Length: 491
Image (cartoon, rainbow, N blue to C red; front, top):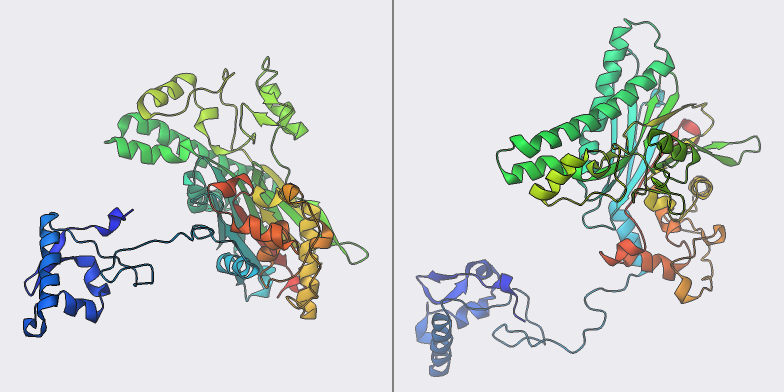
């Protein structure tokens, strides 16, 4: 079938009587220009002149259009540029991934950053953001800014896992850190240089989260009635229609305090050395789902008489996988407002059992940890990583990477034998420790490679090479940030 994008109104050049689409003029070879040109008619023999008149007549009779392929001629094309096609279609539309393709896929997305000032307490962090949805609904941010305490600038790292589109995760990438920094600066200024109690800092951070969510939802609500156009209303409603989990890590280098504020099921885990010198995993957040006992009790207490508000089998809150998130007006706004959205903006129907909103909140759970300078590192990631490996496995993988880096053996280890697994169970089997390899200079890429298969190359290539929308059935968007504290873990 001829591609419609290659048909354009013809350009009638005064020196070329044959109509040629203008965006193809630069692609036509010199021999083609001679064939379709009348600049030197004296060199055209009778046969070529007849061919030229025939092509021109066909083009004019068809309304001034001429199909000329923008691709280089191949053995499947005729001399005039028309495609003949091929019976050999297998594997052409989606090519199978190779290990080389996996490496390119990881390397393209992986990034490493460093801070030259050792007084900051952090000298390196690695990140990666890989899409399964199209476009990706995940996002991330890293920032450094004075907090108003008069000391070294504070450091911020965020991972945002969006759903129902990327609008909310993009909004959080843009605005969550500025909201938090504003509150911190105002807090420290109000104490006039005196010590600020740590719990008061937590209150300021929590307030920033809730205020940003309230501002987004308020603007979306106002957009229903004060927008000048339908498209403006949809633009302003987009973040509210969508939703996002968020995890924000905040490091104060002046006190070496690390705060982690969590909304949803993004996760942060700290790797630190125990007495034996091995690394141990300490969770700095808990997934906020119906499987979390404290969340189950909190939601039920807020909605007495609604015993089925959370399905204990699936852990879902009226169909939603998490109990806290930004946006998600379908679980927050009054019934009347949602019915208006459905009538005027084609939004979703009310959730079954929707009685006493709001059911969700963007208030974070905050943990505070003292970084002791013993070679700690922080792994924070969207659930696309945690769907495949545990927190303990993530810490073990980073420990393997640190050892290989120090020994100079990244990518130089012996090749492990392929594990023998039944093809029909290849997606459901999670990687085992014996499958782990160290092949990547970027530790975030190293985590992804092993989460998707490690030395199980068939599984790795299959999961990595799957294209949307099918890819979403076997892996989620994956976003990771790994932060190394103190000189014992610097690159």
